[in-house]
Amino acid sequence: MEFTDIKSKDFIELAGIPKHLHSTTIAEQRVKWRLREALEAIDIHEQIERLHYTTWNADNGTVNYSQPLVELLVDAVLHSEAPTIGPAGGIFSARGVNGEEHHVAVDLAAVHEAASIVYRHIKETEQAD
Image 1: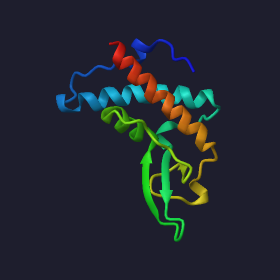
Image 2: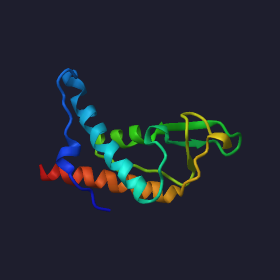
Image 3: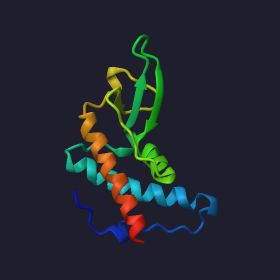
């Protein structure tokens, strides 16, 4: 996967955004466009803001973890820890649910690979700056 026009897509105006939120705002900008492109490259065209990685208790179905993919990746970038989207969960269109009506039928391994590509590219770009 090759990302193009990186500098212009990474640019975000920080005027009016409190200084303590700059790192998060920049990371979110970098994650969103890359994740959108990476998922589209593997034929996933869902709105990225609606995609949540969720895990649940296998015995009773209770959700024990749910986080938007964008937020998961922003946290990974900010903490320099590669994201993990494991096979014990799924992608859902809402946070904190695991019902079939909210399940997004995508290849979880492909989503993990796309997230990993996004993370690595952001970290490589940061190193180059």
